[in-house]
Length: 464
Image (cartoon, rainbow, N blue to C red; front, side, top):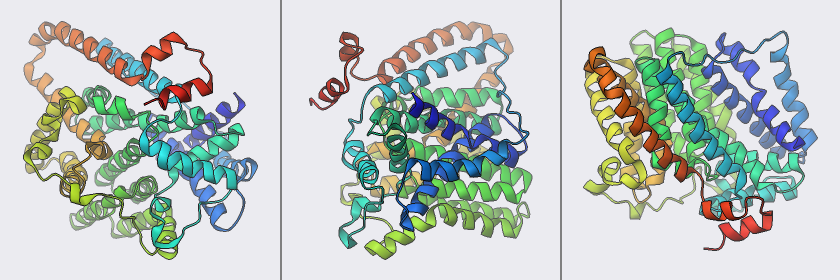
């Protein structure tokens, strides 16, 4: 339990700096705090490893809290504002139920998905056992050049527990995946209203793919969290003109690239956005350079190491020859209901409405379309054999869907709202039951022996 408490304190410690940077408290500060916490922790670990310092719990934790604690001096944290209407409270309850089921699945079962078992956990285990990074061996270092924010997070959990505690490790990164929900909420709120924010988070939570992968121990949704948060700050740059927001956006893109190398696509997209802001005199020129510098500070060291030690920046592990350039893959949100369900139709509708809004000068719609459509094009051209990669930019698309739903509700008119509300609540309860069922795996084994041992759990998840 001490290990769980330590990891929890470590994740929460960044909130002080986040609130001071933003000069406000709330959900955005919570999310930025998580980013600061995980980013600072893993960057301390890789910096120590690169200079030859053995990775130990004390050697990591002490400098980490030396950096974090000054922000808490004479600081009083506040509870984020909770919804006031009963409909928003119902949505919050649904989100908490789904998030709780996903977190339970992450904390109860060990790693069992292919890449988690074959790449991320073995990397973390090797670092834990040797107290050093896995050495590069030239051009055949493919998987050893993957960004390691997630494996280092696992390693810290192992160090805190004193053994390879897969449950603590998996729970810590499941929290990063679940952070996509408030990120979608904030982005949807910025697009239209709090109602759009709640609907955006709800669309994401009810997407079958989200429940299936949020607790898998993969890097896709943690990357999506940083990438979505970067979109929020990029939009804030346009609205405020603050260089501080541009720097934070750049650092978040860097953390996304420090999580998964596909996020490098976001670097030129952020540069294009800020350059357009400079041209439109909404952003100062130095904001662009400082933002890219922050991005390089967060992720550049790892890619330089790859170039020096392996001879390349990004490993050639994408099977681009298997990309499916078909109409079915182009319409993936509609043609694969097992992955996207009703959310897929809402996403497509949100994209269509976003294109219309962007044509009429809507800044938020323009940003999200810039953030997602080039990413989708890259997926379709190079890696459309695996729809899982669509998770990387799913939350911003759900924000567009939430915006569409909120505008549709306003268009219906208040006189008609009571007639639809009961039907919508019943539909929501049905979809919630389905989402809860998807969130927890190996349910029958769990019901037969809820207090099973670690060995029994591994036997279950590996039996296939």
